[in-house]
Image (tube, rainbow, N blue to C red; front, side, top):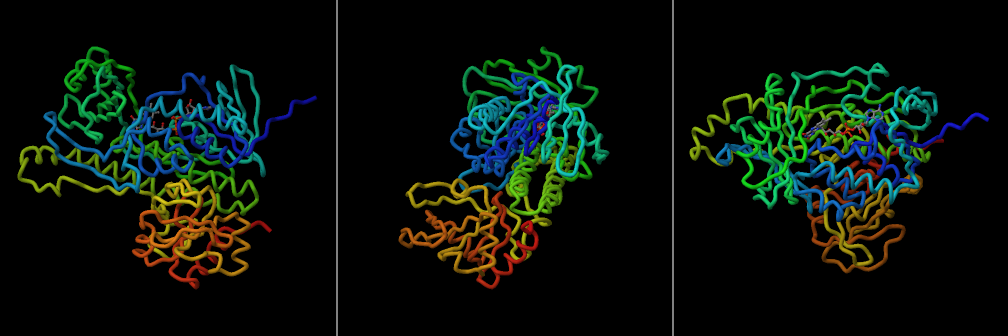
Length: 521
Ligand SMILES: Cc1cc2nc3c(=O)[nH]c(=O)nc-3n(C[C@H](O)[C@H](O)[C@H](O)COP(=O)(O)OP(=O)(O)OC[C@H]3O[C@@H](n4cnc5c(N)ncnc54)[C@H](O)[C@@H]3O)c2cc1C
């Protein structure tokens, strides 16, 4: 009898951080997942990226990993450009959410081990791992994608309703699908070194770029005596610099303590962006879709946001809650943010290439501090896609806030909301504000109805069909007041679909949601 081809809801090619996060997000939504990884699992934890941003911290928090990640993610304020004598020349800062830092330094092998352990323990019933299997070719039918695997010249296949391509910057799948990349500028060379010191070194709480070191270098320290160094190289410097003796001698000038070198490698890449990120049921994500310049260290964050944007949509389509149309919003929602981060990186690059830092060094003390600081907005904003048309806050993350639930437990709002659409009303039952047909639609897509109880009011069980949360510090009240709104419609990824100030406006907002996200007939 012919062997049955294993069938899944989602197949994921590549078990890097992006693929691991995608698998966990899908398993949390009870989808059946296959992960195909060319390497052995023990070879997976590799030190590549060193920074993550505040939005990614919220994603991990929503996944329920806040406590565990406190050990692994080290809060940082931003990036400082300094000289060899530690004089501050320039500071790049980012905004953050309540309860999180603007960015986090981390040691990638530790994060990868943590994610893998979650996959293999808490979610193993939903996830099959095909390690040492290379995905070699894919074929797309009307309802399924077939993935052809090769393990030591033994060939097999799996099938899935949706395919996420998360196999990094050298992925061959876009070429197989005739999806061209657009290239931006030159090749980059970076010598990345991880060190471990005997004792803790002073923690500046910033990633720091020493611009006049022997070679420009970015230093990221975390609380576990671990340091990451990213030396910027020119192509002709690679072979000369990449020797154990030279690396040690450069580091001895930078580390004021005994240290051990954990890993070194040269990272060479070209900045590129796919023109097309989706072909029907196949989605290209992470480095396979976009490789960004290294200055702000936000490439991995961008990849994690890609899969966070997609998985809930795939889940709603897979569960026949909405039509497949919402999947087509993926590229339009993600690409502008990726391009924005690309442009910020290119701006930082131009700053390095200019004489700006030399001037600042020369005029030190005479330049007002405000000029030496820049706030870089790295937050995602969805303009085109599954968002409303009314409020200026639409398309942004809903603010993080401390709240209390009926069990009197103090939590962040991300930890109270689950992966569903949410209709929030301030000091009012949202169910009372909308039409019966709209309630029916929202119930079909399993919307979470929430009434927010003001800080000054008494917190007791009451609202019909709605959960209650108590505005612990009054921050939500201030936010709704500032935005002249009473209702908020949130997507499962905490992005604000739209805000409304009264019932009439809310009905219009929901009408647009129903139009943009129809239910299958
Ligand atoms: C060498 C390197 C160094 C980097 N250094 C930095 C840095 O210093 N700072 C920074 O901010 N960012 C850095 N980055 C970028 C950052 O690490 C990436 O943005 C991030 O790792 C992308 O994650 P990913 O999961 O998309 O891809 P990856 O981490 O590349 O993971 C892809 C996975 O897919 C697997 N795979 C590939 N092909 C197949 C196939 N056909 N079948 C099955 N499995 C397959 C691979 O084995 C791998 O495990 C670096 C990237 C690389 C590649």
